[in-house]
Image 1 (cartoon, rainbow, N blue to C red):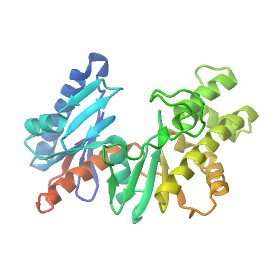
Image 2 (cartoon, helix red, strand yellow):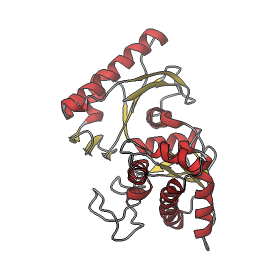
Image 3 (cartoon, rainbow, N blue to C red):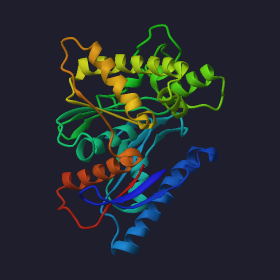
Length: 306
């Protein structure tokens, strides 16, 4: 878990990290989030003279933002957790609940790589692949909270099975975990990962280049499908795989360029906020909540847990 106190302009005033404690079960995860938020509140009082005016929490899985429910998370093991109500009761302030990737996309769009862009798609390449569709300063959740799930676009029909139930999903070929798996098999080292593959690509290893190119091609196929549907002005690529820098971005830009026909080629840029994006996005959700309620922008920070 990452937590922060965030100023009205997106400034990180204080940051902290803790384990989710998920090995102790889903109830312990919820308890740890509540305790973490309470400690953050106490830090605000001690160092700023008053508690945060609002809180935002961004969590993975399926989120019902309107009802404040963490509906389902395979990784954390919870179902239908009334997280917003629990936090509101514990903290005594308004609480916004959001999805982790959409919150990260909100931050990248407003104060990161997409600042000033009216339409963007944020795609973090990590253990899986997700997406956040940015429209005029907000992120689209969709009718059922599933908008942006680009990782489950089928790019290789009949290909590797995906836990979602389909075969050939994008994240089975172009996520950091997929590249790690492919490179470990290719080089014969079970401990090798995507970062090792990127280093081998830069060093000219032919096996690594083949693994890398397969991932880049799959990613380009998925991105072109997305830009055909969404017509974004900017594609923002983040997550662990993006840390390879131009080892990723140079071939990816070329692969996308080769695939577009009538579509308008968007800018393709690296994310700017790194692993702070989720916290910043949760903070922005909290500030938005205050503005929606008609409160003037206060001097006290907003509190977030991601």
